[in-house]
Image (cartoon, rainbow, N blue to C red):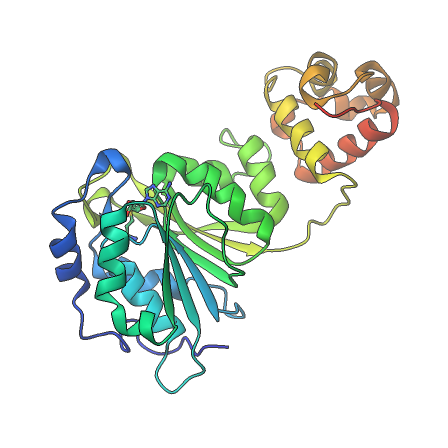
Length: 298
Ligand SMILES: C[S@@+](CC[C@H](N)C(=O)[O-])C[C@H]1O[C@@H](n2cnc3c(N)ncnc32)[C@H](O)[C@@H]1O
């Protein structure tokens, strides 16, 4: 495992990340999800948010852009005197992809760094051990739900409002499908809030850094795809009781016989609203639904 106690940026410290961002950043286009982090303190902190026991031997970055975070991640995986790790950056913009290969040519030549040019929603990811990224917000949800099932440590920036929904607990107003689905795969926490001023060009909204530490849920789920579909279905009726939500959403969850599920379930549980049900309660209900509701593929 790579030693991460070193100063971020030390191994590649001859490069000034602000200067990098300025050099390539003149072409940054917010319409293409290009908001570069320019606050050194935030950039320095991002790699340190990996859980202490994380394996950083092959880090994945999504959206390298002008390379300010890439620089720090190379320092993380290629710590001087340590076993060398690897960094793979996915970048959709061909000009920035070429810029990254050129700027970090030594690391490319020594096999430490490679750039996958393409859409992070489509390309195959390498077998990464951790992912750290300042995500393109237009597709951050889709990317997060490509990454989370890999059950690897993740340190990702999101729009603050999205991050709040990821970490929300049952009963909170932000709690919903996103919270249950994300927390199914990982312990999810906001480790830092980032003001707009830390970016150039500035995004319209505040941001937050979310750490996802993989874990097995403390409940059993026999069919993960059905569980996630069932949660999605019930939250389409979040103002109804669970009883009515189950009855009304069989076409979404794929239940042929939702009434049988309602019959079999605990009456107190069914009188609660979906927004008050903990992930374990959703899981228990989903298992009951599989047993009694005759689920089919949708
Ligand atoms: C928010 S910027 C982050 C740039 C840099 N990592 C930083 O922190 O300053 C997002 C980057 O993702 C790239 N990008 C946007 N959509 C993408 C996609 N679908 N797949 C891969 N990269 C994408 C953009 O070109 C941009 O470089």
